[in-house]
Image 1 (spheres, rainbow, N blue to C red):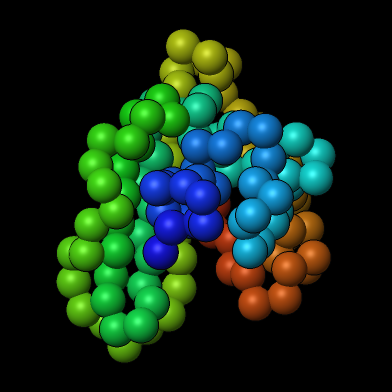
Image 2: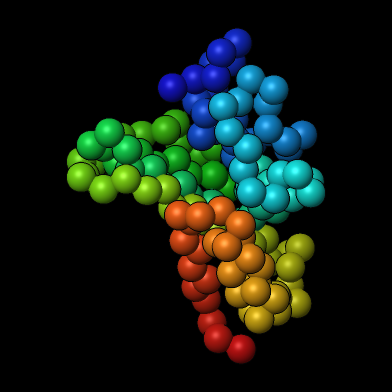
Amino acid sequence: MPIPSSNLSNVQSALTDIAGSSSNAPFVSPGVEKGIGIAVVNALSESLSVEIKREGKVHRQDYRQGIPQTELLTVGLTEATDTSVTFRPNRELFGAGFERKRIEERASGLAAAYPGLAVMVHGPAQ
């Protein structure tokens, strides 16, 4: 469903609006109040995929360095309701890697601040 006065889906608007949430957007993503919203993560990612399970359907959209590679596609049917974002950081920008412990601490803090949110950290253990 597009945001009023935009031809972009809510998902694409959230994933590409670097300035933060649109004043017309019906939601605010975690971290956007500090300027590090999902759109910034998307822009700094080698690849990012979002999968949304809602109203009996599974929707998916893929990005490369913040640029949509597909439209929001319906790729299946489901009884579940959830959203999943998977990304691979840009290796040229983050060649030194990340501190897994800091990421896990931040994920735990986000999950505590947003009841019902599950944050999983995948990747090589350090």
